[in-house]
Amino acid sequence: MPQKSPHFEDISDRSREVFRRVVEGYLATGAPVGSRAITQTLSEQVSAATIRNVMQDLEHLGLLGSPHTSAGRVPTQIGLRMFVDGILEVGDVNGEDRQVIDSTFGNNQQDVTTLLDRVGSALSGMTQGASLVLTPKQEAPIKHIDFVSLSRERALVVLVFADGRVENRIFEPPAGQTPSSMREAANFLNAIAEGHTLSQLGEIITREIKARRSEIDTLAAELVQSGFATWQDEGQATERLIVRGRGNLLSDHESEADLDRIRTLFDDLERKRDIAQFLELAEGGDGVRIFIGSENKLFSLSGSSLVVSPYMNADQKIIGAVGVIGPTRLNYGRIVPIVNYTAQLVGKMIADRS
Image (cartoon, rainbow, N blue to C red):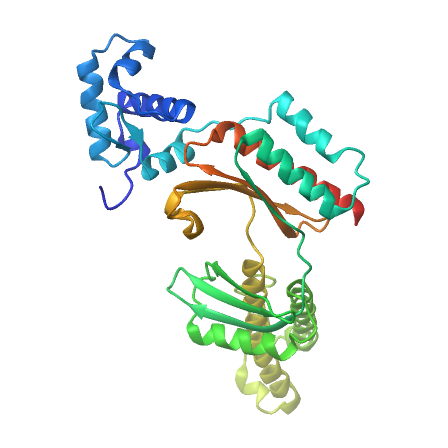
């Protein structure tokens, strides 16, 4: 087994075509696919021996495996991931599936819990898999927040909510952040967090940024008008107030004090911009996700796959998710649109009611 997945573009056209047909055959039947079955479906005249050689090469790359002594092959977990990411074509939900999903919502008069139960039953019935429905979460106030640097590209935010829940979320920190700057951000947020949700904290930081910006503009205006200073990259993240004739300011104690105050405000503004970015990253994440086998610790021993999509409220905040759990040979091309469409309808229903 290779230590890391091969890139799809590094494989020849013939190997790609053989690989695609093996995976599609396996997903359709659940049985190993042999070289003879492949030759019967190819448009070009290729011998079974040639196909066997290609399949052996794909097996060497870790994309295919032999479940037993038969000549047939099945995709490995790495192979399925490559198929899902590089080959799978996902269209719209088909008419029959759409009709079943639409009828589940009916007249939309049921309470949310009952409706989500019906959604779960419909997903199970349509896909022959187990459904996953995460109910709308109420955004609880934050009790404590911590940012932990894992590497230059990865950081962890630990959220402790007032209702006792604890959530850990991985995110990519803004460039240049250090463990020290993350501790400062957490200390500031914890000082104001009590009674506020994550989104409310974001609003507070936004107001703080506007207030600091306004104060800087007021203090700097006189210095600029008098010719003692000029803006560089005004309004940009790299903005600076360039001071001219510093010696003249020494006799003007009021201007000197304003300059020191501006420097302090700039430092504060930069910290709060970083904090705002941290909060935005902590709340991120959307789209249909496919977890295959051990990619999700919950299913690492069962060899199952999970296709899941979040749904959002009227404010475009993720409040829950719907999904399907089944064997790794799920019909991804059909199930991904089903899950995505269902999540959209649930989100619309929640938004309409709110």
